[in-house]
Length: 384
Image (cartoon, rainbow, N blue to C red; front, top):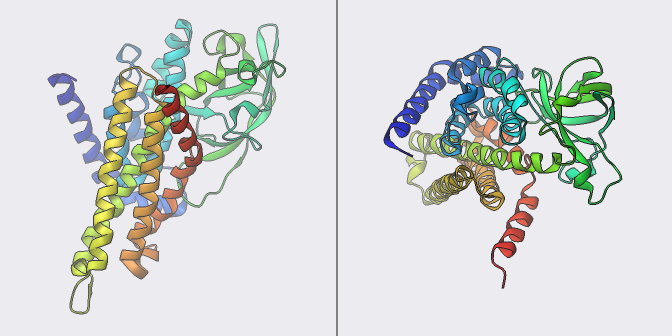
């Protein structure tokens, strides 16, 4: 990264930091408790260019590296993690088009994605299919110049507020191996495409998660990403690398917020005549929490650099996602204990960290699956 790029990235991070303190922090707690979609903040994110963060400048985006993008995600997650989901799922969809789409698809969609004119996300998960993507049942049958789609997707971020989704479908349910029968379509809302219901969640509130239903929904053939059937599985997996780096960066943000709040609280809360930060039991917790934050941050930076280099990085992204998400969960739990009764109260943000953190251990591939991916890549890269 040259000096000019570092300066530009620094200016972007500074602008986002000021926005977070001015427009997000004062309102995040109420919006989150009410599970209200932050429409005004979404408009501000459009103005900041976040919906085009990783889209190339030639298509109207900011063209940020994954390294800078991860720092942005971590910074926002320190204040309110839900906001990152609104543009991350959208950017995974955009990455599918940018990396695998036809030239015509890039010209038509990427500028609109970058401007936030069209917003959406990734539609992979189904009621009976999460980690095992090859088990999807949503079917797309070609009839002339359209694909007719039938099926259901669930846990889709931006499902209500978004208007376009990278939709994983089965175009050939008989072929073996199964992934060769999967394709990815750009599906814009229209006749036959409806929102089944909003899904209520423990945390990660404010952003809409929904069930999407397709009933004889027609998609023009030229919306097949890449223009060739049978590559949808690889498009999805390629997008998940960036998605896992994003989730890992969220983990860094939440873990850091839990640590900072605990450092501050432990200096003002007193027991037995002295601040609790002077008690060894609390010091042990703070030491572990700080170490987890720094280790998670370094793993995220390593994964982001690998992604920026253009090489396969599912192992690095998996390591970062695994460690950072567990760090967030552990730090949130320790923060709740350090805060005592106030940690359990809705008057402090600690209880939000405690509710938000578990999602990162599940989303974008469970941590159990990350361990398997890491192990398989270790063997693959170290053959004897």
